[in-house]
Length: 259
Image (cartoon, rainbow, N blue to C red):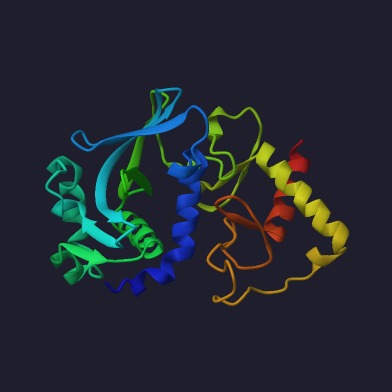
């Protein structure tokens, strides 16, 4: 299964998934009190805190993947899945030229990283906000999600969540550093990042006066571009995203001027 067409979009896909994984951790990184629930007969995906729904999304199954045998099975080819959980996405996938003949095969061999990236790419290209890799037994169920509700209130999109801690901007009592497309970093996460910037300045005084240019596309972690300027300049790596020192410096000046 050739999915090389996904590679060019990886930086953007990483930025999108950072917003989701700031809000609900990957299955193997869930913290105490955090869980999720999937019902593809509805179809919906719920983020739960202490067993109670915190966020609700419309969900569609892109595919299941079994890492042990590297098998990718399209959701619409899985007879155990309710049609409500695949039909909407199947129609949308039919409009994506790159998928073409791939949709004609029932199952494919694909390694875990490539499967994850392909599912995220499909979710984005078909108009969904995010892709979550739910675990079902020995398989991963790749879910295309569009969030509709948060704590019982209408939800306006992943852009409103802090890239660091995942809290909603509207629920924070502190200022928010705003990037393009509503990408946000709350003041608490920003101050933690500013501390790293201060340390970097101590080690290399005056480095902010120079623009070193971008790293080459094949450099380590090159797909983790700055979440604000989307460049590959030297940057602070966060759990699911990155911010370059120059954007952090501008954010630090703006936030401290506002106080």
